[in-house]
Image (cartoon, rainbow, N blue to C red):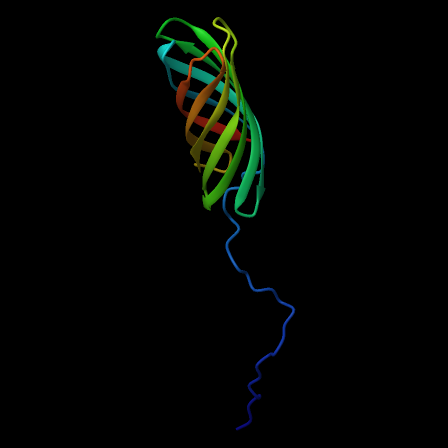
Length: 160
């Protein structure tokens, strides 16, 4: 009754997988659409529809990015257009969920002349390999015009 000896390798060049890297890759360019509300003492409650474009860089479980957005506003005291430039810093909470803080600059592109420092944050959920949904809150601290703003938006981004 002969048999091969049982051996246990003491070292190996094979790598052991530590985790599943099949999560959403947030790195790259994106463009999207959004809708929401903007509320301010001077403008009242206004409905917003807009477009945005940006770029992200994911490093392990954190993210850095920049975004530009333009929104049309109607209701309250009238119609207006508002533009903003935001920087984003986020944490990857799971394979397809990102939580982020945002800060930047906003300007009313029509009368009245208003400029704001923006600060807020949001959450983004990857639905497919190229589409994500997001909810965001941003507060505008007046730099010119003395009219603070609260913006709440919901949108979809398409990643390239």
